Image (cartoon, rainbow, N blue to C red; front, side):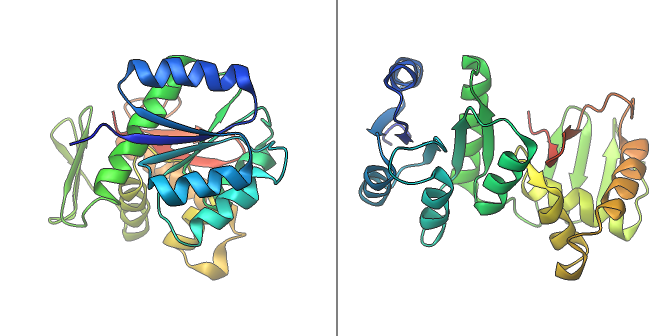
Length: 229
């Protein structure tokens, strides 16, 4: 099997050099583009396993690149951008990005996000009958059983739907609107208070310390992420 292919759409030469060294050291195949138009061609011709895209491109906004890719491809997309505002993150994720890394960024963080993206590319969303396990938390979807350190935890139907939605996208940031749409339906995408209440209940039931969650992480102003490693 060939090593995973990654297309980087980034106009800053120093960032491209850093990514080239970092990703080649992990044996990834790297293809580079400096504009949105070039990036779209690279994604279409290379059929990569992951796309890394900057939002501030010289010819077209990175958000438009994401939207165009999403018209025909489910490839995992990681945004790499100096825009660190909550609204920028939410907009990018809602446009179809799978993850968001702020500049400046650390090598370990970026490589961890790439590994998560590659797992999504290899397996898609998790099978509805699969057993998800991470650090003592087990979600057995076939039996509809959630347990922590071997002890079964009773969840309400909404709590269970919330946790399985997060499991299906484990490792990926889900915005408030995405979670509200999937769990409560499209008529409730503005009802963020539902999500806060149920996430608090869920943390009290499955986290060892709800004030310092291990599994259900908050991305401030953006949404939530279930760890998968």
